[in-house]
Length: 108
Length: 113
Image 1 (cartoon, rainbow over the protein chains, first blue to last red):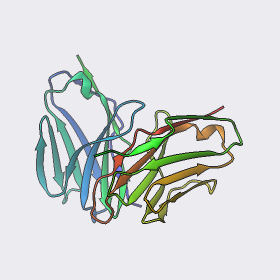
Image 2: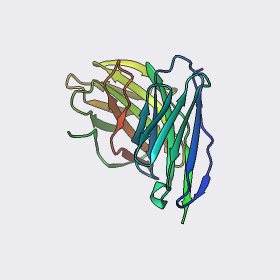
Image 3: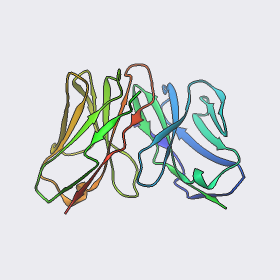
């Protein structure tokens, strides 16, 4: 069965520090990978897409992909209290498979 | 560009009733996905429609059903409502066949009394 696994957390990070969120996937045929942010009671919002090995940076966010290790990560630099949310990792090979999410808490 | 729109925002029903939720995808998107998210829990995949056809179905009973119209909008129907059906129902759309991300609507919060 195809799976995407994330530590459920909560992950607590001081304001201004780097938050590191990790995800592993079981389907070696996965083509694309996504990180979504979901605030409590709201819908998921796409924040990063990554399609090839290496790093992809967008503002304070960096996504990292290692297909050999079947590992995806999201780094959030200069963490802000507004970054407190649940972060969902997803991998797609024809159909999108979702992780259960990691709850991130940024402490002022 | 308008995003995914869902209606109604909130829906209150009683046990045994039927609920209909609606979704309009982003213009040009042919695939529509439905998810259930109970309070404090993760996304549970319900249904996937593409080009008017049901492509896949999650582990939900047959009283959860839906359809996709020629304009790619979609309906989710839930019959014989039970208390545990209370949840946020999310619709997402994407361009199918190109490993594209899904984009979500704001959801419909269904409460069963």
